[in-house]
Amino acid sequence: MKNGQAADWLTRHRWFGELVLFSCLSVFWLFLWASQGKIYMGDDLSFHLNRVQGLYQQLISGRWDLGHIATTTFSGWGYPINLFYPADTLLPLAILQVFLGGIRAYTVFLFLITLLTLYVARFVGKRLLGSYFQGVLMAILYSFSQYRILDFFARGALAEGMVFAFLPLVLYGAYELAIGDVHQGIWLTVGMALIGLTHVVSLLLAAVLVLLTLGLFFLRRTDFKRRLGALGLVVGATVLLTLTFLAPLVEQLHALSGMSILQFKLTQSAMAPGGFLLNSAVNQMGSGQINLGWLMLMLLLLSLVMWQRLTPVLHYLLVLAVVFVWMVTTWFPWALFQRVLGMIQFPWRFLAIASLLIALVGARALTLLLPRLTRRGQWGLLTVVAVFGMILSTTSFIAFYRNGNTITQADYHRVATTSDSTDYVRPQSLVAMPALRTHSVAVMNPGHGLHQLSRRVGADRFTYLVHSQREQTVKLPHLYYPGYQVTVNGQRQRVRWNRMSILLAHVQAGTNRIQVFYQSTVIQRVSVWISALAWLVLLVFGGRQWVITRRNHRKLN
View 1 (cartoon, rainbow, N blue to C red):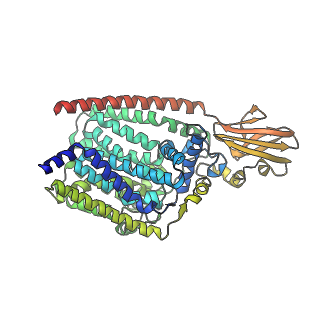
View 2 (cartoon, rainbow, N blue to C red):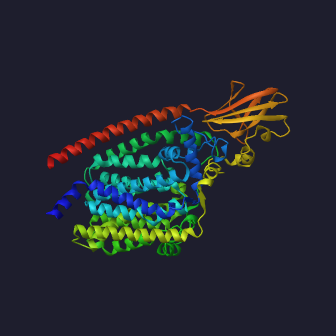
View 3 (tube, rainbow, N blue to C red):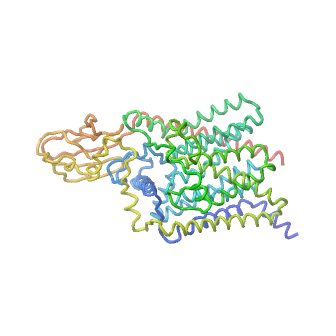
C-alpha cells in the first residue's frame, strides 16, 4: 500500500520531481565550469559579453529598450551592434547583471538556459516518442551533447548555445505540419521566431531542418492543401514576429553599399571525415577540433543497429541525422550550395541539428535495447545516462582546463567592454578604426587647431565639447549608419560622411557643443509595433488553443 501511495504521489506531483531532476542536472552540467569563480573564455565570448554589457547600461540608465549603438562597449565608438545582431533574448542576462553582476550573473544564466533546454527537449521528446520517460531520456542526451559544450565553452558562442533551447520546437512544429495536427504548427512559429531573435545564421540552419523535415509528408500524403496553407501562415507569422530585427537589418544592408554578412568558402571550412570521426571518438575540446562527441557517435551507431525495430517516422529522422553529419564533412558537395548557404560560414554548425535528431532517435533505440523496464528500471537508466553524461562532461572540462583562457570577476568589466570586433564595419572604414577608438575629435583631425575639452556618453548618444581656432568641417570619431544624427550648438545638421563613412560636422570658431546620437528610423519604429502586435496575437491564439486542449483532455478523463 505504501509503495502504491508513493507511486500515486509521484504521478500527481511529477512536475516537482522533474524540476528537482532538471535543476540538479543543470547544476552538474555547469558545476566544473563555474565552481572556481571564473569564466572560461571561448573564441567569441568577449563579443557576446560586450553585447550584454551594452544592454545592462541601457537598463541602469533607466531605459527598457535594447538601444541601437554601443556607447560604453565595443571600445565605445558607437558600434551599431543591435542593428546587425539580435539582442532580444539576451535581455534576461542583462537583468541578471543588474542584480548579480559579472560572472555570477553569467553562471546563473547558463543554469537557466540549460534548465530551459531540458524542459523544451522533454516536451518535444514526449510528443514525438509518445512516452514521458523517453522524453526525459532524450532531454538528458541532448542537453549533455558534446557540441553544446563546445558551443558554450570552447567557442564561447553564447547565442548559438542558446539556440539549442529553441531548436526542438522547430523540429516538432515541422513534424506536425508534415504529418500531424497542423494547429501544432504554432510551435514551429515560436521556435523559428525565437531563433531569429537570437542568432540569424541559426535561422538559416533551422530553415534547412524545416525543409527536410517536411519530407515526412510523403509517408502519409494527407491534406496537402491544408498543410501547405498552414506552412504559408507559419512563414508569414515568423516574419512578422521577427520583423523588429529583420526589417532594420535589411534597411542597413541596403543603405550601406559594400556591407554584407561575412561568408567563408564552405569547401574549406568543412571537416575532413577522418579527423572529424577521430575527434568525436575522443571528445576533443579545441575550437579547431569541432566534433559530434563520443556519446552522440555511439547513439548514432546504436540507432542504425536498431533500424528494423524503429518506426518509419524514426527511420526518416535517422536518415536526416546521417545527412546532417555528412553535411559537416568535405564529402558533402558544398561547392554547389555556396551561394545559397554561404552565410552559415562553417558547415559544422549543423551538428546542433544532428545532435537533436540523434538524441531523439537514440532515446527510442536505448529503450528498445532494454525492453520491459519497470519504473525503477527507468530511473536506473536515466541515472546511468546522466552519470555517463557528467563523466564525459568532466573529461571535456579536464581536456579544456589545461589550455583554457579564463577571466575572473576582476577582469570581467574590461573584457565585457573592449571588444575590437569589426564584423559590421564597411571595408573602406577599417583603416580608420584605430583613430575612432581614441574617441577624440582632435585625433581625427590632426593639424586643424582643435582641442577637445570633454566627452560624455549616454544611451545612444555622445556629447563633445570642442574648441576650434576657426570655422571648418571636421571628422568625428564615428561611422555613418542610417539613423545617426549630428547637432552642433543645438542646431541639427544634415548628416554627411566622407568616402570612409566617417561622420562630418561643421563647427564655428570658438567652443562647440557637438552631439552625435542615434534616432530610430521610420522602418525601425513601424517594425517594432508590427512585431509587438504579432506577438500579442500569437499569445492570444496560443492561449486559446491551450484552453481548448485542456478542456478536451478533461472531457476524455
